Length: 203
Image (cartoon, rainbow, N blue to C red; front, side):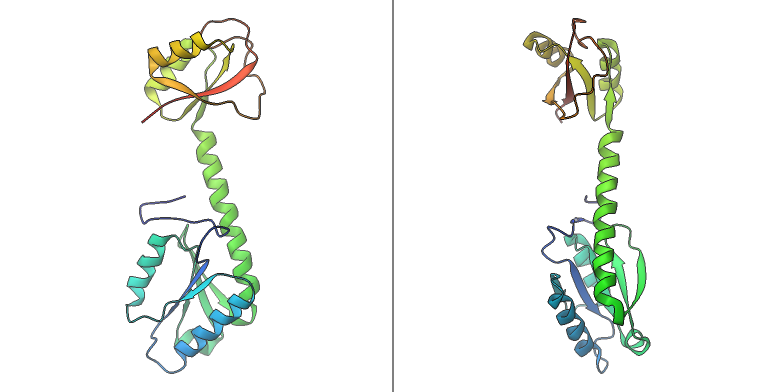
C-alpha cells in the first residue's frame, strides 16, 4: 500500500491509527484540547498519538505520512473556536472538517472508508496485472511485454513447467483457489489440462 512518501498502513495493523498534531500549540488551550481529544479517542478503542513535540506542524505531517499513519488530526485555535477539527487521510491527503461533537463516529467511519479504499486499490492493481494466456505464443508475448502474472492452464506435468522456466525465465507461483478453467488444454504442450496456474518472472 506504500507510495513515494512512505508507508500506507491498513488501520487494523497500524500501531498508530490517528496522530494528533496541534497547530499553533503555543496559544492558550490548544495543547489541552488536543490532549482531551486524544483521551476521548483512546477511550473509544483507537490507537492514538498526540505529538506535542517542538517540531513544526509541517515536519510532523511528513514524519507521520512516511510512517503510514492512516489519519492525521489537526487542531488549532480557530478549530477549537468553531468546535471542529480537520482529519486528513494518508492515502489520498483528503482533508475533512469534522465536528468535535461527532469526532469518535466520524473517525471510526473514516478509518473504515480508508481500509476499504486501499483494499480495493490493491485488489484492482493485482487483477490488472494478471493476464490470461491460452497458448505458448501468447505466454511469450505477455512475458516479453508486461510485468505481472500469466494465468494459464497446466496439464500437471513437471516437464511443461520446466520448459516454461527454461524458455522464458518464468516459474509457477501458485494455483489460485478459483480454478474456473480459461481453456481446455495446457499452455505448453497442448494436452488436456484441468489446473489453472499463475506463472511469473522473478525480479
